[in-house]
Image 1 (tube, one colour):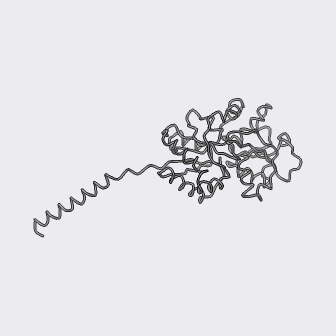
Image 2 (cartoon, rainbow, N blue to C red):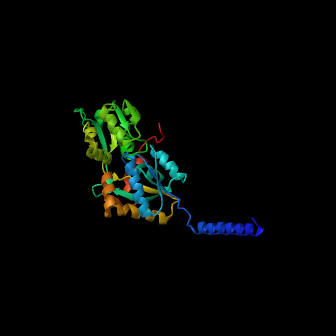
Image 3 (cartoon, rainbow, N blue to C red):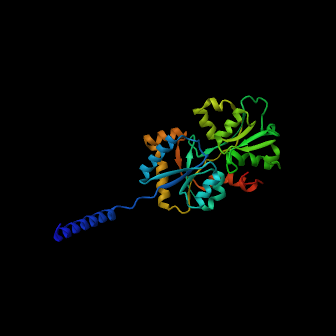
Length: 292
């Protein structure tokens, strides 16, 4: 190879490298995924549904979405505080305890309202129990110590009577899931339990063979549905974008299909006053909030 040809080839290679560098420089930087935390605040859906919901949100948000699932509410709150999550679908109880550090984004609509109830359940074979008083000295299942429907409501009722779950019942345990509370009562592992009424109702549609083994002993007053929240690090633009994506679900075919799977009518905006009752119970009840 002559020296002249060598320099021609070298110049051509440098030209190609420069052109490639310009093309890469012109490409927009890859968008970071929006990280959304999911907890037992809703049913333990299969991966197929989660993937379909992720694709739906990505299409409407125009950027990647990553769902992060944890078994305890407190784990999700910690991730929000550490800025390892952008958004989360949380229970009303941890929301009111951390609302100074969180933005309220959206609230689910169930039967047309942003409300739900806590159900006190017993075995369908229990024909004797008529109230919570009949479960004294019996085994009782809670879902999570940071759950409103799965712990706070019953603990508050007992607190008003000067009682505590640990001494009122012969034994208590946490299942870390509303579904598993129902399973515990249905199987006889527990003689009573406190569960999210929306979850019980939804399971009654999808798995009546399970819920038929339990009986609703009592229902709480209505509370604000578990909300979607955002970390304080999330921009207003990002919050508005997720709100629009969630609100849009009730207006298009794919969104309606996903909502039907969730047994919800849609999502709406609300404010912190929706959770005043939970806030009041949290502040006035003498309840230990540390995990067992």
